[in-house]
Structure formats: structure tokens, C-alpha cells
Length: 339
Ligand code: ATP
Ligand code: LTN
Image 1 (tube, protein in one colour):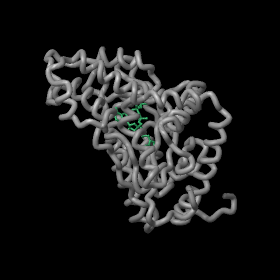
Image 2 (image 1 turned 30 degrees about the horizontal axis):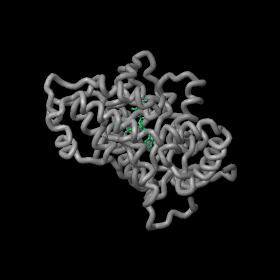
Image 3 (image 1 turned 120 degrees about the horizontal axis):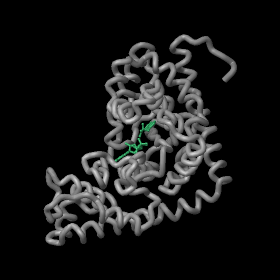
Image 4 (image 1 turned 90 degrees about the vertical axis):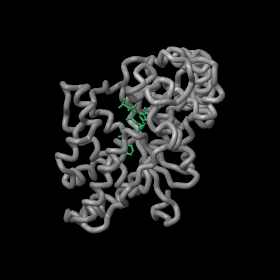
């Protein structure tokens, strides 16, 4: 990534928490869009381990999951010739900027974030300040690169909207500093639902393994989970209100095969749920097989992974430092020779 941002190429930033193996929801809603974007944009991708400690996570597990997340992203097609992929805690400018942005964010705005409300309900014994402040660190991740576009799933739209508000407020107070980022949300599969409770989103931290397809699950496991997916008492494979389970499976099928929903409905016309579920399972497993293969290779080469995240982290630091220094100047900090 060159220091100067060429006018014609926009910058993409996205991050993902290393809280567990990635799900089909993470993959369809976010990650699988990351690789194709590399053709048109300059991309900066990040494993956000600092976000992950807003809920309690065992340190050894976090370390392992962070490396695994890094390898999974490479396996999903992130190309380090074109993009940067690094670990958030290696690049201190994110946390430094988030402190400054805290002072341009209102308590009321953070209180309205649905992810904060959900997660504080889920962990009532640990409603920590980091969980509350999570969206400001996310805004800093994005703004410290002056990103134009942020590919995320639907559930992150509210956080992104807040990042835009913070950027505009800062620019209004201190003069033009940040690019106001836009969300980039996939048209199909922006919200993949749980296989067991299809009104809830599929989530890495779900305790029921049958609710979630992991991108590293083997073929038999994927097929078994699809067969057990909760549907309804009818038998028609059609996308219709009230058929949450079938709608979700149709969305998944369409996302992995590239067929439209009406094409899929036609394909399974009169065939019943059993055949449909098996076909969904097979299509998902076939789609994910190359990712699984590449991952197995990558995770066994820790030396290579280290070389990659070190090089990318150093470059991300260099780039983001320029934006941070500008912010420090704007808010009135005395300039330092220390960085
Ligand atoms: P956790 O359970 O730890 O909160 P998560 O599975 O919700 O994790 P995140 O790390 O918060 O996943 O999200 C990573 C990316 O995947 C984000 O861009 C998010 O919008 C997207 N994403 C997460 N879940 C889904 C889903 N069910 N459908 C579509 N996109 C999703
Ligand atoms: N909050 C996001 C992860 C995340 C992110 C970001 C996404 C942290 N920083 C910056 C896009 C851009 C999540 O929970 N999925």
C-alpha cells in the first residue's frame, strides 16, 4: 500500500472478531465479499482482538483463535500482494484514536446501540466500559485509514452509522479530517439466521452447535446440521413470510450456488424438505471445501503467518500514524518527536 492514496482507488476497511471459528453467516454476510473487492479497491482487513476482550475470553483461547482467524481469512482469498491483513493490537493507532473519538461521542448515542443492549443482557455480570465503548473503537479502526467503504453484515449497520456521525462531528469541530465512510452490505445473505432458531442471527458465540455451520466443518457435519435445521409443518420450498427456516435455507442455497431464489424454488418444486435440505448441505460443503483445504495448509505454517501479520501490521501502523498525527494536531496536542 503506497503512502499516498491515489484518487481513483477507494479504500476498504473491515474487521472481524476472533471470538471463535467463523460461521457461514460471517462468511456469506461479510468475509466472502472481501476477496472480490481486492480487484477494485485498496483493502485493509483486520482481526480485531481488542474488540474480542469486551466479553470474557480465556487468554490462551484468544491467542489461538486470533491466529486461526488470520489463517481463515487468508484461506478465504485475502491476497497480501494486494491487501493488508493484520492484528488490531499490533497497531496502537486504533486505540489511540479511539480515545480522541470518545470525546466526540455522546453517552446517549452509545446507550442506544442494540449490540450493547444484547450483549449486556447476555453477560449481566460483566457490563464493562469496553463493551459500552466498543463502537468508538470500531469507528477508530475505520477512520484511522480514512476508509471509504466498509463491507459488513446487516447487524453492523447501526455501528457504521455511528462512525459516520462521529466523523462528521469531528470534521465540524476541528475542520475536514476524516472521510465519512459508507457501509457496503451484500445484497444476498446480509443476515444468515440460526438453523435452530431462524428468527435469530447465526452467531459464532451460539452455544448450540447445531444452530451454526462453521466454515471449517466437514461435509458430513454440514449435511447433518442442514438436515436438522428447524423448518415448518408445510412441505413447499418457497420463500414466504412466516417460513423463516425455509427462507434462511433458500438464502444460503442462493448465496453459495449463485442461483436466484425463484430459480431455487423452481428447482425444488414438489420435492419436499428432505431433498432440499440435503441439496443445501451438499452445496454449502462443496462451496467451503477449498477454504477448508487452504486453511489446513496455512495453519500448520506459523512462521509464514507471523511473517505476514508482522509485515502488514508495520505498514498499517505507518499509514495510520499519519492520520493520527493530523488528528493530534487538530485537537491541539503539542507535537512530539517521539513518534
Ligand atoms: P459474536 O457471536 O462473537 O458476536 P458474530 O458471529 O456475531 O460474533 P462478528 O465478529 O460480530 O460475528 O461479525 C463479523 C462479520 O460478520 C460482521 O461484518 C458481521 O456483520 C457479519 N455477520 C455476523 N453474523 C452474521 C450473520 N448471521 N449473517 C450475515 N453476516 C453476519
Ligand atoms: N464490530 C464488528 C467488527 C469490527 C469491524 C470494525 C467491522 C470491528 N471493527 C471495523 C468493520 C469495520 C463486528 O462485531 N462484526
